Amino acid sequence: MPDANFRVRATSESAARVSVKARNFTMIVDEPPNLGGEDKGANPVEYVLAALAGCLNVVGHLVADEMGFNIRRLEIDVYGPLNPARLYGKSYEDRAGYKEIIAEMKVDTDAEEETLEKWVKSVEDRCPVSDNLSNPTPVKVIAKEL
Image 1 (cartoon, rainbow, N blue to C red):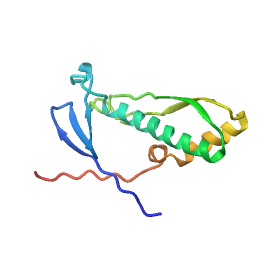
Image 2: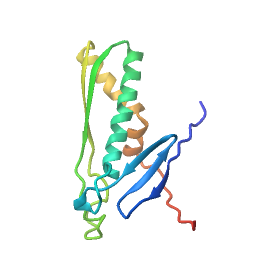
Image 3: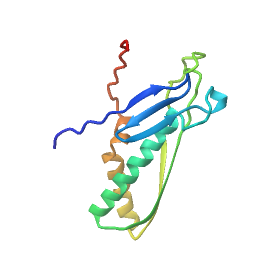
Image 4: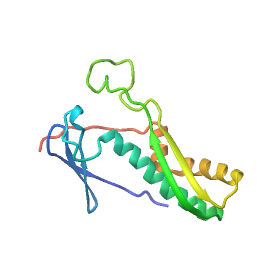
């Protein structure tokens, strides 16, 4: 199967807010007031958690269909601790990102426990966002003049 390419384009609206276009969709990324923003959208690290939840949802339903069981309801709670000290240049002891991310998938289904264990392992293994968060992905940040 050939690679699929994805792209977003962002335009800064303030020091804390950016408007991001993904295909025909616009997302506002902002910070809460205590972090210098106006709270007009989720912040970048919340979007990371949302991306994981969205991906787990898609892959979860796909794998359940392949395994032959029905998901009646799926709730995904994603969370993790992050120390903002590095972001603000106050300390370099902790990493800038999440120390860990936990995704709890609560599912109402007709599947047995053993099947659910296989399901969740397959979902985590096949989720592109989980893969990007769990494994090093080369990121290049390049500055160019407008």
